[in-house]
Image (cartoon, rainbow, N blue to C red):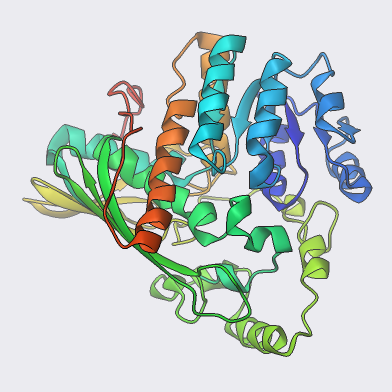
Length: 407
């Protein structure tokens, strides 16, 4: 495997690609010399290139993970696929629906696989909820997801604050929640009605959104994300904020620095990149199962004909006719990977199984396009104050996770 773009997104991906026995991390590409040096230092035996074109010429690379800024996702995926490489692309899949159309078409023309990756729909608890509903609770009738986090306080480049470049909280965080509700509800949304809020003068993009979705079968879903970092949903989970990027004191200081104009956000970004002082790839694997916490996705409650579900620390709580019980997922968890944080693992294994065993790609280009359509639907609905009808939706095949055994 190769990776194009060695920024913070890649820092979450590279350790998995390097450590998984099913994959070999061959090389990475980035125009930033310091990031290339960081790759070679952190992952011995890899190679570094200064362009995607050079990466694509490496004969050992069969697939490329696209972790570049959102506005490059389409261009870089097309280049890789036309070079005969399978592609895993970060969320959002692209910036426009027209771009996703081209990506789907080129994947078919070139005979390669395209995976729309890195969303919370890959996490074990969400996938387990889908199985539990089908096996015992009946049709999913309602999905509720809400997240309170500090996304707007994190260091950002100007590009990350540009809605036109496919950045901002709706584009960057919406796919996590929308992919989850689509997976649980079967995939085929009918419409969305959404609103957004821009409440922080220091940031020009929305830091809040909420939306109501209706599926073709009448199932409903409501999502909310507040990224301003005053109330943190992690407060509701004992110990969760101990692992968060910022403390309460940090958030107070960051707001003051932003208001005074004294914050050096580029310097902070460098700290979290490969080779930086707070390089996330330098962390070792977890010594044991890590408890779930509301990070990107937020709190999730699923209501079915005969019960409800939500996350537990290490699995799923099921509220049914016989009361509450917990379905543990430890037997499904691979050592070193959190139940919720396995988005990279899930995407890579989906591609691996497709290439090696001929299994279907479930989070396909068409699936990613449908998630982007729903994401953009929130923006359109908020701006035009109307319900938006969705037309590019696809179902998740019943065969997905057929081999997942919960007991």
